[in-house]
View 1 (cartoon, helix red, strand yellow):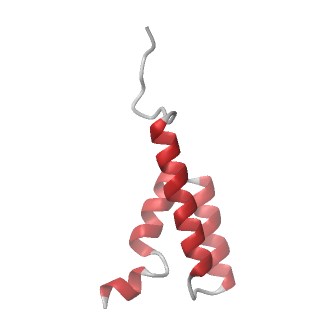
View 2 (cartoon, helix red, strand yellow; view 1 turned 180 degrees about the vertical axis):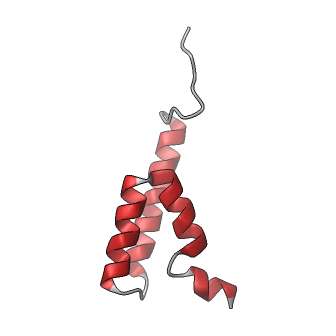
Length: 68
């Protein structure tokens, strides 16, 4: 019997995170942010997939447009 960890990201969970991260990266490149900000957001999303996505979702380039 295998022990399932809360932090184990495989199967459907891993695929879901991959899809959300790809969507975030594509949205970053499509935004009107400066090149430097696009690079920083992309690196954050790649190296910290879950946290980076959540931070992008809340503080990303389009967050300012949503709050107006």
